[in-house]
Length: 250
Image (cartoon, rainbow, N blue to C red; front, side, top):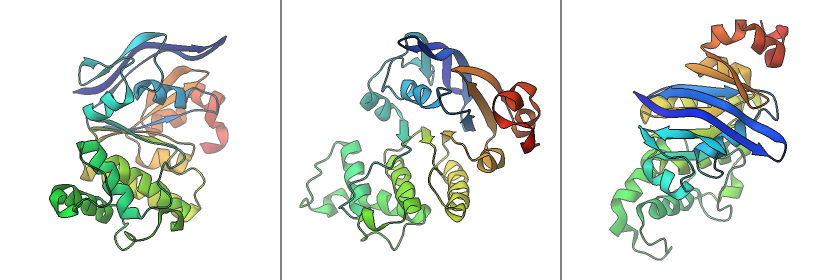
């Protein structure tokens, strides 16, 4: 079953054509990477899928429904959730409160810190479950700014999971991380993809990560989808080698 489908999606910014007739179908349960050089249109594509900008023409479908140009808030309620390249956190609040407030907002409940939290036992239990699964247990009382860069990115993904996504989009999840943090994030993405039974799409420049975990890899160059396939197919694709990978990766 196709979870996300793009049909001839186009976007211009002035004279710059940043999405060029992009068509693709992402299947339910797929873990897919979108790669390409800087300026290829990857973030613009994410922005169109998540409703932050609308395509000039073409259509985007989610679970068979046309979602082209719908507001981000509506798409989140439908199950399309995104974690950003730069973590969006309440840096002066605790790890737990970052999750708890996001979960309350998603469920439409009162986010006042002085609310009796026992009233929202279901929300609290879900937050603790996510903290445990993402390796943040024991860090609940730390302020977000006290976390390492890597753990701040993990927390941002944890916040996304409180919104119970069907489709999770991750924008450069290993950006700015140390080698050890990148390895940890790679394993975590695979684990949460399987644990939460997600369809996951991520933009990434770390080719070891991409080739290590992605079921399908899609390559954008100058706003055009030039290739899609598994790791072996992408590594051997002459157009991808010339435009992005180079021969040194072979």
